[in-house]
Every structure is written in structure tokens, then in C-alpha cells.
Amino acid sequence: MEAGEYEFRVRGRLDDARASRLAEFNGDLVAAETVLRGRLADQSQLQGMLARLQEQGLELLEVKRVTGRR
Image (cartoon, rainbow, N blue to C red; front, side, top):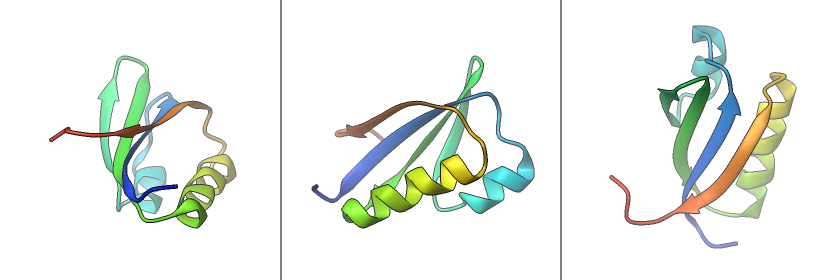
């Protein structure tokens, strides 16, 4: 896996407590989804992020690598 910017879409809106646990990612509320964007360096960090989302009981809708944004 290449280092780069990734986008995670989860169902619903993150409350302040959940958002603070994912502070290194920028979040936007889009309809009934939260879009988290942040930089990951390797496969290990990706697996860690997926585990963190699961631990918080968030429903993952999509993960993708993004380029040319911001």
C-alpha cells in the first residue's frame, strides 16, 4: 500500500467523544454520513484505522485513496 490521503465514510454523525478519538482526521458531515480524511503511511496504519472504527461501533460505508483534493 502506498502512503497517501484516504477517505473513510461512516454512517451517521460522530459525536464529540468519537470525533476526538479520530482527531488526526478531518471530518465533514455529508447528509447522514461522516467523511473522515487523513494521511496514512502504510498498511499497518490502515488496519489500525479500520480497527478503531470497528471498536467505536461505526458502520463503514466506503474506504478509498484520494488524490488531488484540498
